[in-house]
Length: 194
Image: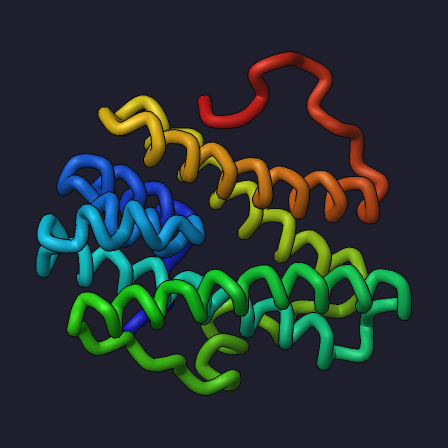
């Protein structure tokens, strides 16, 4: 993959996932529902592996974005602890994706170098804690809207529930980051996914 995937590409990835029918097996494994995964494993396809590898590349990007922030020396101690916790969430997502790809017999996409992510995310423009948190908040907001965008496309309610849970996790991250930045929460209802 010659370029890192942008927030807009995240939305496209999830929309394509819904259109191509991301397998219930893959979603089941990601959601910790191995029974669902086993029952649906015969429905897994090559397209699922491609989608999962796209998701894996996004998780690699998120992990490295938080690593860049953590290693920048720009984060105060309590903020650093939260950033590392969010990074741990993304590492768990990465590990689940790798396990799922392995179970499908597909080769997981490799992680790029930290320098590659630094260039792609313009890490040299991060001058203070607010810059680091702003980058993380933008990435998390893109993920919220992407997951919410695919919920209606699922015919299987279990898949819609998993997408909703992922959107909830991303919303938690975004809310904490927004509050740390001192920004106001959305003033209106139905602020996400539109």
